[in-house]
Image (cartoon, rainbow, N blue to C red; front, side, top):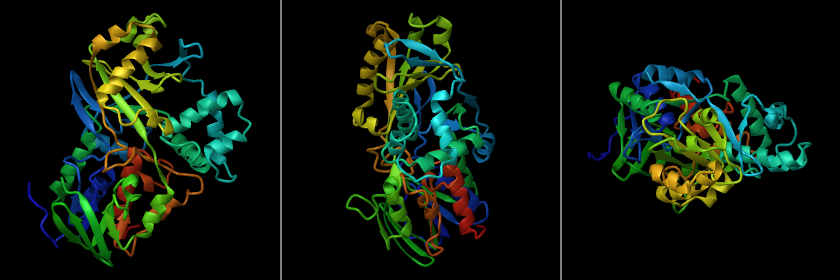
Length: 441
């Protein structure tokens, strides 16, 4: 492994080889800008993490779905010649008596209160506070709370109604209610971007943890565990959770502290526990809880009475070994945080057996392995993805402002289009930062 020796022959340093950093690096290197991407991990992709599993093409341990039809992301997928399969199938839900029922995918009545927030002009309070004084019937509120916390990985007592309204409008504009899975792994787009950077003379330095950044006008010095790098400018694409710990005892140092760090502390990092179980067979099709054809087409499963409350399969993709992915986001994720993949899988066997009314031994005998990654304890992520608290709607835009034309910030948390927490938000932010460096924005 070659060390990062002191090098003044760099125009722009980019911290982080996630989608935002690699997108910016690719855009700049194609314009002849000398870039070096600095990444603490031994791989590119950031919170995209695709892993090969027993009998499975890939298992996603980070971002999985392509949400909607954001043109920038779909153009990149086409460039990579990546195939994306839309998630279709039956939606199953645990009813109040512990049985299973099939949802009507066209029934969106329970989400109508969220859609009504699109044109919200009142005080930006937390969703929980808004809901408590709303006209939403008491019996319908738990489902809305669960959806907001699970989908946004957010605390309903923190996330703002303004941001939810903006998000709803953004999703409608891009068909955000539709989701696709990238065959062969989402991480292939990060690997493609890294390859393009290198083809244009850029450098992607792995296993290089940033320890400190010292900067002044048009001069940046970055200390890593592999040496010191210098450049005229720097794009910082580190996750929000990492930025929020800057200049703390456990965080990296940035001197002087940029104004963007204060804005980062006004935002919030969401937490998620997700794990994927790989099975020998689709044992749930043996359940008598629902008709066989309904079980064969199962796409999503919602188990409000158990943890995790959300599950999905790979349907309608053909698969050598069937999988079930469990998901829990927001404050309730703490109940499962810190557990190993094996522990999560073992507990889930008992839960799933109860939900489908099958013998627990059948589920356990079919389980091959369980995969998970703890993003909250990962020092290079410190959480899953960002959301906007009440009163902080201006913070993402404030973070996009360059610091003395020397420091630039990108990442899904800097999105200004209402798509926080998505891969296409990260991609857009990288393009925006590159344009700022080039003086085109």
